[in-house]
Picture 1 (cartoon, helix red, strand yellow):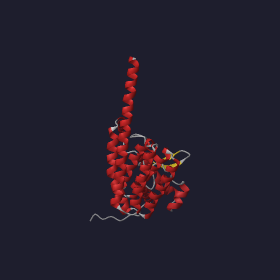
Picture 2 (cartoon, helix red, strand yellow):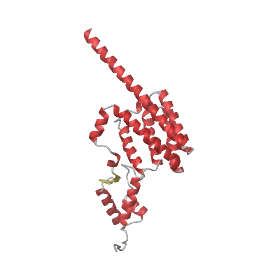
Picture 3 (cartoon, one colour):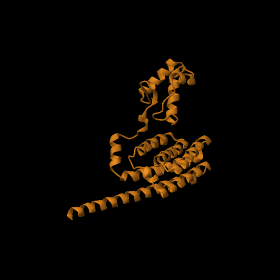
Picture 4 (cartoon, rainbow, N blue to C red):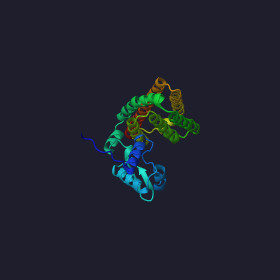
Length: 256
C-alpha cells in the first residue's frame, strides 16, 4: 500500500503558506512593507531562523523582495498582469478605452452583486468609509483626490466580493487606470455637473451594498459605468472637433 508516515511540517513552510494566503486574499498588497523581522517573528510565534528561511523561499518565488536598509516588501510585479508592450499598445489605441469599460462593467457588476451577498460587515464598513471620504473630497473639489478615492472605492467593492482571481485581475486593471494608460480620470472630476453625477452614482452603489441588495448593487454599477462611457465619448468627440477646428484655422492662416 502506498501509505507513508506523516512528517511534521517545518515551521518555515507554515510561515510561507500563511504569507502566501495573505497575498492571495489581497490583505497584503503589492508594494506593502512587512513588519520588522523581530515583530513578524513574534506575531507568528516562530524563531528568526525559521522566518528567514520562509522569507528566502518567498523571495525565490518572486512574491517578496528585500530592499537594502528599508525592509521586506510584497513584490510590485503582482500588480501587473500585462506586459509593457501590451500596455503601450493600449495607450496608443483609444478604442481600447471602451473595451476596458465593457470589461469593467461586466466584472464590477458581478463583484458588486457578490459583495452585497457575501461581504462581511467589516468589508461593507470599509466601502462606506471610502465613500464618506469621497463626499468630503467633493466639497474640496480636488480632482486628484477624487480620482484616487474613486479607484479606492471600486477596489474596496472588489475586495468585498471575496473572489481572489477577480481581485488580482482588477487590481492590475486599476493600476493601468491610475497610470493614465486608458484616460485621465481627473478630467471627469473637473466638471461640476459630472462630479455631482458621479458622486450620486457612487452613493447609489454604496446604499445598495449597505442594504445587502445584490440586484440594486449590480444595476447601480452598470448605470455608473455606462455614464462614464457616455461622458468619455462626449469628451473625445469634443477633443476631436476642436483638433479639426484648429487644423482648419491653421490651413486658412497659411493661405491668407
